[in-house]
Image 1: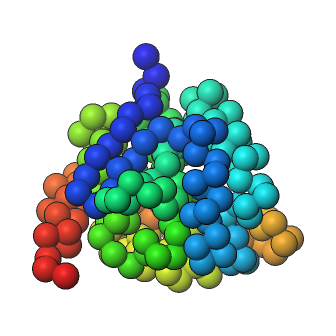
Image 2 (image 1 turned 90 degrees about the vertical axis):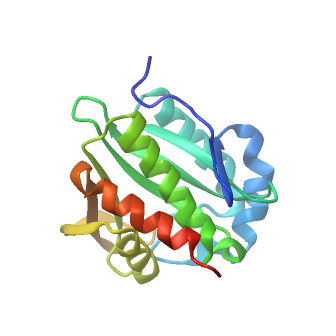
Length: 196
């Protein structure tokens, strides 16, 4: 059995289900909400590249290095994707990444609950010793969201990658380690339970 086998995670505000090619049409509609592929510092697929992106994620799943999810909101509408990536079964580590969310589903409880479900599964079922997050130095929205989770900045990998437009990406690396998980979990539950 694979270290990180496909699983469906259900919450009050979101459901994470194993990604498949059957999600293509819904994913295209979701990515159009905010024209997310236009952000230069992200790698979100344009509508015409969605099938190739789903195929890429599924190929990495076959290799054991990624576990991709489709993200649905409380009404069952697909609003994005997320993954466990860079899966390291030997050292019990995963990265939560390759995440995008339709603009209309941002800045609400959905993303917080998705991260809570992914972190709970990673620490409590997979027995991870650390969960990592990475983002572009200039993606301030993503950096703030990662920091609100309770992740700590491990460092910045300078000139780490080439972006699709040829610019060099400085990558901010964050993590939550197993000993921090109980406090992080309590914090995320508190955030979700706050009156809106």
